[in-house]
Amino acid sequence: MENNYLINLNNENFDSIVLNNNKIVVVDFWAEWCHPCKIFIPILEDIARDYKERIIVSKINIDKFQNIVEKYDIQSVPTLIIFHNKKILSRHTGVISKIEIKKILNGYLNI
Figure 1 (cartoon, rainbow, N blue to C red):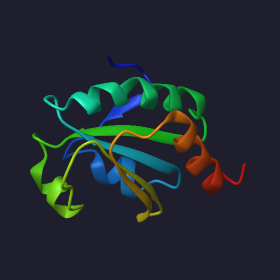
Figure 2 (figure 1 turned 45 degrees about the vertical axis):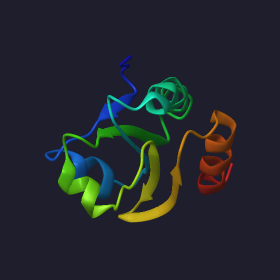
Figure 3 (figure 1 turned 90 degrees about the horizontal axis):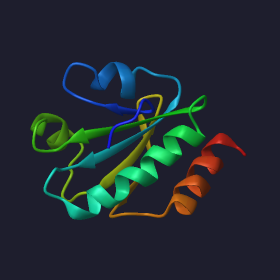
């Protein structure tokens, strides 16, 4: 289920990878018990592979890092938040298609 393109976030690396980064960063808030989250992982892996030079795709387990969950007011999973330069560009709850994610990212990357 893991690959080299999808980064696992935690309390130690969240700020450096997500906030203090000049690339667009996609963060998937997920949980082990969440079936839709498991469906979403291969989509995110494809996105991470397709955009590997231009963006960072990451995930964070909501059951392990409650402080980050509270900070971003995560109410349900999966929730996808796209960050750039410490700002939230967009936020989506539920599984969204690879085509939709690419359309959103391409808008921010001016493709």
